Length: 186
Ligand code: NI
Image (cartoon, rainbow, N blue to C red; front, side, top):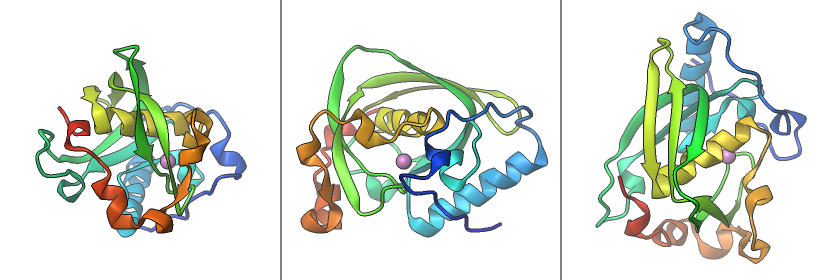
């Protein structure tokens, strides 16, 4: 496995619409997924889309670690998942602002309006179908990663740029405390 270099905002690879993965079961796709997971573990992130590691393919790796879920939430941690060729559909017209940050935009966070409930279909590395219904934080995470596959970064979704802030100005701890348990629902 290897730690991969993260593309930062401004890099052309982040602006492209990524290509579908032709063979989800190909060994190089499994290796890419392993490397993306190791990279995320190294950085301590939640999710990574292949374009963020300079691979313009429709693939996402993510998890929700227990330490990220505030006390009083109903959500359970989500173990590592690899989504190949995902298709995301909103299940509601309602959007709510939610704090986001992105490994491609280090040091910043901002409030982004996101659909509160989504459906996602994809295939796994074995080619088997994956079917996810997600709400709250989980739904935001999927929308954020899915956007990367279409060349969209979260500031492009923001409607109130006054919330775009340096993490240092609120403190990393504060950033997590700002999340409400209500965001972490099944
Ligand atoms: Ni991101």
